Image (cartoon, rainbow, N blue to C red; front, side, top):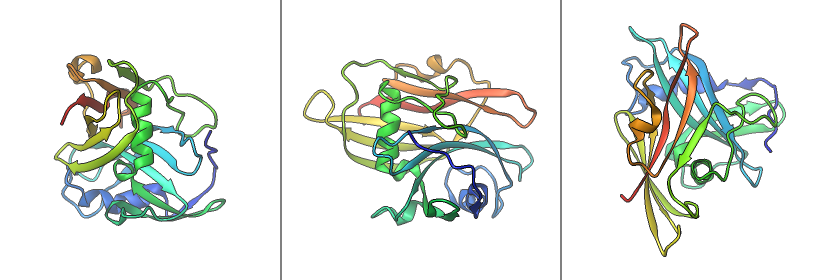
Length: 226
């Protein structure tokens, strides 16, 4: 179980993301910096206890209309080899020291735990409270026997989502999964299960809109095949 330290980060997560978000292909704004507010999210535990995993929702108010984004983040005590392109930035933690913050779609530990969540082998945890499951996060898996261990992952960013092509050992010699991580969250678009269609699995979670009401959307959808 990860321990959440109530400490100050310098720079803060929102400060790191404010400069990083506008450079992403799925960013809907037009400026060089985002005006961000935290709007929700949840955490997952790394079974090895080495990597922090957070699925953060932030709302950008820099444009004419607020836009909410999902940003999966991983926190490491040392650089992740080969992931320089996915580095959001570094921050100083009062207890843990320097932390390297990554776009988690490029971090194999985060991707593995996301699949574990979909497959019912991991449980979403409250974003800011220790040892507290988050029952508002729901996961669905239509298959049987688990999703398998990851062999390789390739990442492609699109206009509204990030596509992960994941090869696992699955129940056979090789299984290919497409995981779509939704970046731009859109409230009020109907039931999550209906929108997931014939997907193998999905994760659905809520976040807060600027007016204080709660919205829900699909955070990730898992499909079989490329």
